[in-house]
Every structure is written in structure tokens, then in C-alpha cells.
Length: 454
Image 1 (tube, rainbow, N blue to C red):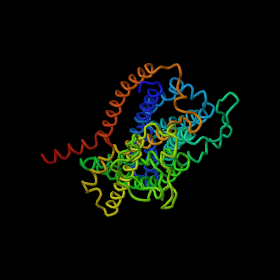
Image 2: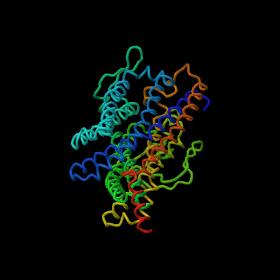
Image 3: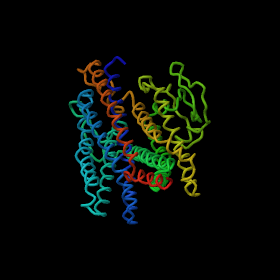
Image 4: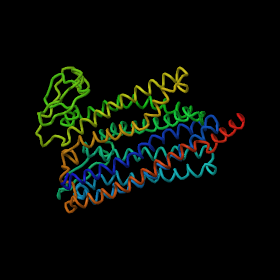
């Protein structure tokens, strides 16, 4: 970890991991805000408007922190990754500039109107503002994912006479097949984060017997949307994302599965500990032939192991990649189970009174954040040792004049600042949840109940 490239990687990994806590929630909440505003518009019930205002306030907190933590990452392209910026800036600059100029300003402008202009806009105008916040949020997500997808599977480029990578087809960059499936998979992950947070807060209100009408609305909306998202996360989006890796990044697939030797009828590893030195998976719990079928739709298909590739092509953090992938898949499976069980209880009319199920929903709130982080770790660790797959190695993309000590200095500074931001975020979010959709409403009811009892 003493080399500059290692510290630069840790630096970016820390800042982007902390930053992504906020966009995944805002992108998920954006869809649910449209759902609530649509219900309000169709029914004319003020209940849904108040529910939307409550989640809009939490959306605003996360949006603000997402902006504050997102800006430093773009500066890191110049400070820590100058060689990468010089080599590929003509390509990735297109999508990053579009994200800033179009989607970010669309989202931020109409978020201001959504938060502060409801009386002026009227019911339909306020719905339109909410929809444009959703559109800007999801467009922003696509342009960021398209940038990363190009680094995973570069298309629409040519190498200029000076060795710089130039854009040859804007539409190949924007409609990269890797971007389309990665985007769908990423956004479903964000929707699940939003759904678990909304359902979990609703479960909290039902368990504490306060704001119960809103609790039922939050639980119902979070569970119904979350069930669909959890299933689609597995198939087709997760399945297609896995196939792209299998066909285009074969060493990555082998490392993700802890497969060191090629096998016909390759098993799917459920558990195990990769021993890179001995090139084996210790204490494996495997399902025979399943990896071959999932990858190539043939039970006895040959799946290449890491030994079939030069060690210089292997991901450099195989154990961490293996565990990140299995955490992501394991939590994704748990999400399906939790949401399907909650949906069945909802259908049977027992969910709101099932304390066990409500506790399960409430305690699951942190899990989508962990799963999304593990998913991004799988994607980025799996691309190594390449910064742009097949074109530019990670070690060649750093700023040659920035020493490891310089990067450590700023990383420690970011850790301190982000600790304070995390405390602020938790405080503001807790305060909004404590105040509830009708600030003071549950306290008035408690006072009335106390007076009646007295």
C-alpha cells in the first residue's frame, strides 16, 4: 500500500463509496416520490401529498450531501489520475459533461421547485416537477454508468496519432451494450435501497404505534415496488450482466467464482475461501454444473479457470473480489425472500400486524447500501489490472508527480471531513423521521390520549 497507485486507488474507492450512499437513495426515492404524487393526483387525498413532502425533505438532505461529496471525485481525475484524464478525457469528458450540464441542472432546478413551489405550481405542476426530478436523477445515473461501462467495455473510439484515445462514435459510447444492462442493474439496486428505506421507516412507525396511516402507506408502497425490483435484479439484469462478464472478461468471472482450473460442468461456489497461493478454493460448498449452465446455458460447458490466463491478467485482489461478489449475490437473494414474504403477508392482510415481519423490514434498511457497495466493488475490482479494459492499465493512469505521501495527506483529510458529514446526515435524517410526515401530529395525539386517560 506504499506505492502511489495503491493509495490513489484507496483514495478514490473511499470517496466514491461514501458518495454513493446518497445517490442510490435519491434515485430510489425519486421513483417513489412520483408514485406518491401520482396517487395524490388521482385520488385528491392530501395524505399522499403529505407523504410525498416527508420523503422530499429526506430526498433533499441526501441530494445536498451527494453534491458535496460528488464534486471532489471529479477533481481527483486531475489531481490523482492525470495520465488517465489525458489519455481518455476526450471520450469520458462527453458523458461527464452531459451529466453535469443536463441531468444535474434538470434535477436540481426542479427539486427546488418541488420543495418550495407547491402552492405556486398547483397539483399538476407539482406532479410535473416531481417527474422531472425523477427524470434528471435517472438520466444522471445513466450518464455516470455509461462512463464506467466504457471503461469496462470500450467502444466507439480510435487511437489518435499522439496515442490519445479519441471518440469516433458518440452513439456507440452512449448506447454501449454494457451500459444498457449495467444501468438497468444499477438502477434496480437503487430502487431496492429506496424501497427498503421507505418500508423500513413505515415499519418503524407501525411498531412504535405512531403515524400509523403513513406507516401503512410506506410499507405497502415499499414492499410492492421492492418485490418487483428484487426479482428483476436477479433476472434478467443480473443474468445479462453476468453473461457480459463471462464473454468479455473471462479472468474476472473465474476470480469471482474462485475457479482456478478450467472445468466442464463447472460448479457454482456458494461458500469457500480462495487460496491464491495454492490456486484452490478451500472448504467449498458447491452446486455441480450450475456455473456452466448459468454462463453458457449448457450443463457441461467448459468454463475457463484463472490458470488458463497469464497471471498479469488476473485481478490483483482476488479474495476481496470473490467475497464482494458473494456478498452482493447473497444479499440479493435475501432481498427476494424478504420482499416476497412481505408481499404474501400484505396480500393476506396480515403484514401491518406482523411484528416479526415489520422488524425484518426495519432491520433490513442498511442491507441494500451494503449490497450496492459490494456490487460496485465487484465491477471495479473485476476490471483490474485495467483502468480501461484492454487499453490502459491502472498503474499507467495515475498522476506521475503526485507521491504516495501527498495522496495519504488528502485521504486522511477527506476521512475526517466525511466523518463529520456522516454525523450530520444521520442527525438530519433522524430528525425528519422523528418529526414524521405531520410534524407535531403524533405528539398532539399522545397528549390527547394522556388527557383522556387522566
